[in-house]
Structure formats: structure tokens, C-alpha cells
Image (cartoon, rainbow, N blue to C red):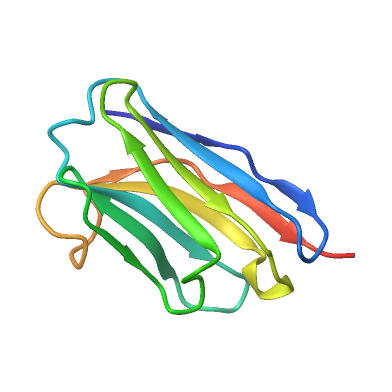
Length: 118
């Protein structure tokens, strides 16, 4: 399954963006789907993941602001980002894990740039 991320862009602090990830095939068999991000000079950070059963995990830095959703029928995963801050600026990657999200991803999408700036 190939993953295609979209929806990044430039937004002012406090604004919102919705990232989308489309699978070229079925994602229903992929146990966990989610998003990493990487900012220049910083380590990669796991932002949010969702299991096929609906369990979610969020980085502490985004809890209460970001919401992940998953539509297996449409083969899509979305990340709604509200109240964006400058520290959310990063390249966001859509990922999939066949087993556990603590492992390296089994599936990678290309990144989409999110820039939060006034």
C-alpha cells in the first residue's frame, strides 16, 4: 500500500489545518495508522496514531488540539489540527504499522509541510 499525504500549508498561529492520507489500496488490514513529524534540527516525533479498532494515542504536545480519524472503507486517515502553534511547524508524514506503532513504520507516505507563522 502506498500512502499519499496532503493538506499541508502555511497557517497563522491559532489557526487550523486538516491533513489527509490516502492509501493506494486497502488500509483495513494495517493495524495502526498515524502521523510522524520532523522539524529542522529536531528528532522525529510521533504525533498521533489510531488502531483499526479505534484506539488512539497522542503526543503530549498535541493532546486536546489534534484529532486523528480513520476511514477504512475510504482508505483514508485524517489529522485535524486546531490551535496551531509555531512549534507545530514540521514536515508531517503519514505512516502505517502492521503490528505496533512503537516499531519502525512498515508504510511511509511522502511528507507534507506544515508552517505555522504570522
